[in-house]
Length: 434
Image 1 (tube, helix red, strand yellow):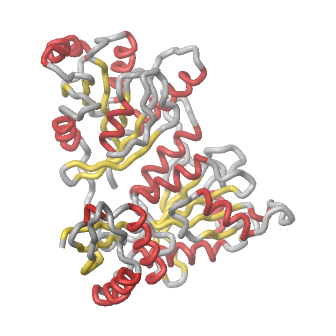
Image 2 (cartoon, helix red, strand yellow):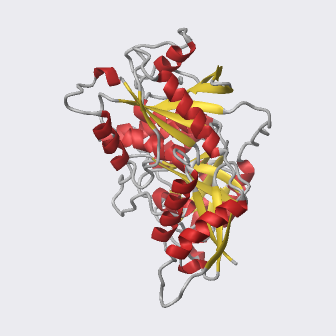
Image 3 (tube, helix red, strand yellow):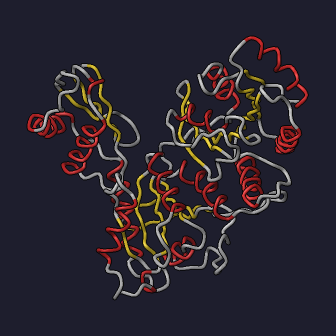
């Protein structure tokens, strides 16, 4: 289970630029206008072999009049509450502001490990200007430039040292199946229907579940832990934001799960919140099963299962090879089919393909459809093998790995899925020099 790192600060200090640098992708929008980041962004990063999850927050403006600002403030407070380590970003060009002092007070109250990242320090003159930031009372200080990356290596060295030590996972520990989804999608009702008792409180009010609870469950000769996502947990000084908090708590559950059963309410649209949770599970390389709940309430004249399924798969492109089960927790329709599918997905995630069989199949595919020439160079793939990891990862060895483009990697992944059935399981492909 990796640590969660929150990047916080007032608007327009370079939080999103630093976030993009840490996850090595341009996911967060960066603009000179303050307050561009309103939705939260989540990404995976690693440093010196330590993996962690990064959360990019909006700019904190205490007591702002704008309704968006108030919403952002709530979400920053929740992110701080849930994070293991906090990177507090300030801007050397404008110096210490009243807003910086507000953020510093919020962070000191949290009692979390804090790193102060003084951004836009890209020359020696600006190093001298950083002295005033000692007034914020944060010991661990780094001079960085998020745009060109200077100083970020030292920042990450310190960040990794400040992360809590992760507990050793016992080999005999039962597999964990997490039930995740938006508030009020029917997660607790699903588990109650499975175990045949009202173990969890269920109400029409979104966010009834406050803490993660494990239930040991045995079905189809297979024993595992069922985990109901703590959709919301009320904290004394945190204003509640149901949608954002559900994702922050789901983060914790997803990190520690083997398979995620994403419960989706059929009477609502497959919106960005549901997709956000789906991609969190996919990026964390978890097995995924989508459970379309409340199917008994859908007017069958307007939507068949086939049409509904196509709509969902369209939203999930390019990762469309995911099992979808239509259930009703009220009538117990197909709830055991859902568990059976989750068990099968777990077994596919644990699957190991013998190297000889893998090469027999994949080299024949590659011979029929070799990688297209790029810049006049022809790539020859000679050998492939599955890596010894907790989820399916494959290495293909060739003469010029740098000339293989993303579409061909997707082609290889699709052929692997066709030949060896990895439905519901993210697959990684690496090209290596022979």
